[in-house]
Length: 386
Image 1 (spheres, rainbow, N blue to C red):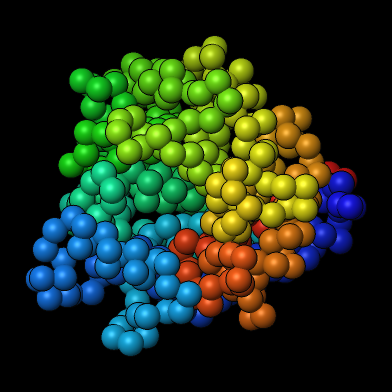
Image 2 (cartoon, rainbow, N blue to C red):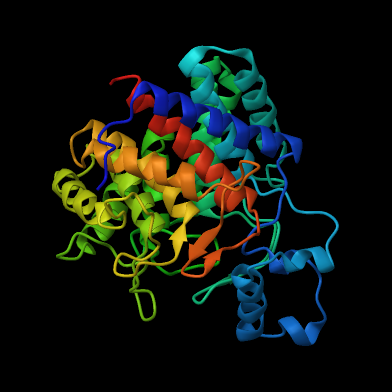
C-alpha cells in the first residue's frame, strides 16, 4: 500500500538537501562528467565509425554497459551545456526557497560556466561530440534545439531571479536565433538541428515554447509558433500520447520525451485553443508512466527499466501539473520518495537505470544528476503549500 499522499514539509526539506548535494557534486567536477551518448567524443579508428550502424553500435555499447568502459581509455570528460544549465536552475530554485548563500554561489558558478560554453559565432549550444541517432547524424560542436532550449530557459530564470539582465538578454538572443535558424517554413515546424528536416515532436515544441516565451516580438514568431504547435497537436494519439517523431521508425513513445512535450504545451496555452484539452489528455497518459509506488518507468507498458532521467523530468513536469489539478499530488510525492530511496547511489548521485537484475553503476552528470536535482528542487515547492 502506498502511504504518501502529499509532499509535506519534512519530505520537501529532504528533497532540497538531496538536490543541493547533487549540485555540489556537479560543482566539484567542474560541471563535467561522462554521458550515456558521448562515445564519439573520443577519436576512434576509421573502421569503427565508418558508417551509421557502426557509430550507433559504438554509442549503444557505451550507453548500455552496466560499468563505465570510458575508464579504460579516457582521462578527461566533456562539459555538456545542459548539465550546468539544469544544475544552475536547481540551485536558483533552492536559493529562492530559503535565501541561503551557498545555492546562490553555486547557481552563479553554473550559469557563468554555461554562458562561457556558447558556440563560436552563434548564441546557441550543442553537444561536444558527434551524434548518430537512428534518424540523423550531426557533428560535434554544432547547435541543437534541445541543448539551446534548456540552456536559454535556465539563463532566463536565473537572470530574472538574480536581477542579471545580461543573462536574460543572452537567453533572448538564443531564442531569436532558434526562431531564425531552426524553423522550417516548408514543413511548419522547428528542426532538431540545422541539418535535419525530420519532425521530432518534443524538439518542435521545445523550440516553439522558447521562441514564444523569449522572442515574442520577432517578425515571424507568431506564425511559426502557431503552425509548429498545430503540427504536434495534430499528432496526438487517441490515448493522449505523442510519437517521438513523424515518419517511419519514429512512432515509439517514452516517458521523458512525453514530459518535454507537456512542459512545452503549458507555455503555449494562449497560442491555440486546442492546447488545454490536449494537455489534459496528455497529463492523464503521462501519469501512467509512474506506478502507484512511484517507480519511474521508461516505457509505459513495461515494468523495466526504471529510469532516473524519466524520474527527474517527471518531478519537474508533474509538479506544476499537480498544482493545476491535472494529476494527483500523490504522484509527485510517491515519485519523489521512490527516487530518493531507490535511484540514488550512496554518495548522492543518481542511478542511470535499474533493471530486474539491479542498477547500473555508471554515473551521468547531464543525463541523470542534473535532471534529478532540478526535479527534487521543483517538487519540494509543493511542500511549501502543504
